[in-house]
Image (cartoon, rainbow, N blue to C red; front, side, top):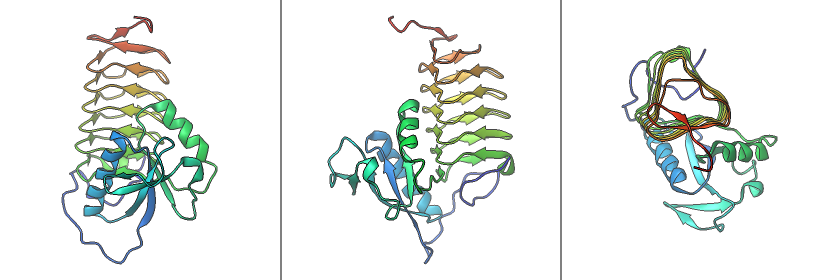
Length: 238
């Protein structure tokens, strides 16, 4: 188990601002210029105030014309046109797990870096016993306890909690205020809606979807959609 994000104090939120120095900043681009992309830009700017690491050169978006300004930085082109000699790192600000995976697969054989983006207010209670995979994004106010595994390119939005021995596969997406109890397992690509509570030791199958506000106290099969209190399967045609 290990934490692979930026240097930070143990057992508390990062709340000390460091002055920029002459260090070389990594040039990164944010893939996705929608609302989540703008939130991630804000997250990176907050993180840079604590420990300067990134120079955000622009957004990458297949559906917005090159040169369009978004929150003070331009769209620099479509994903397939980005040159790793000019942009060394990519951050995928796309909430849909399947879409995010498909975008990563388009560039994974190129020489891009995929940095972990961690808001300064995130609390890691047991720094050395948390493993955060490459390309993951963890937003403000999240608390992670001990012996937690977070897979590559996962997205953990605002004020989530993740309990001991929880395991999140690659490409998981947690929307704001999700509570994951100890021993829970989320397989690849699980999407968990805002305010969901996942009870201890339950397993969510790959690419399943949990509707906002649900309380999950049973295992959920792969590709299923569950919602409600307690969460139950819902028909795709309902």
